[in-house]
Length: 110
Image (cartoon, rainbow, N blue to C red):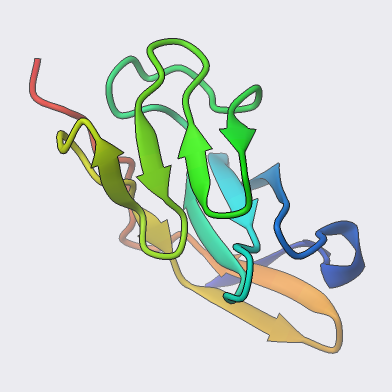
């Protein structure tokens, strides 16, 4: 079931923000020259919220240990440890909806 999280006007291309859908902390990102994507909002390494993460328009960097991911796909850049779980996104009439059913954050092996 899709949950309304925000209006598209609150997210600029090349930007990101944290949203909550069905008690899931989610990074909503609009990568440069890409489309709006939604990924888990906690680091798979430390389970730390990524609210203070740096996003350069493509690469998300965790502020704690500097792990990085490409937010066009959620694929890890460095280290190649763990990808980010991706949530389905739907956009209708300028509103962003996210579906959390069956999606859970991924975590790196301890």
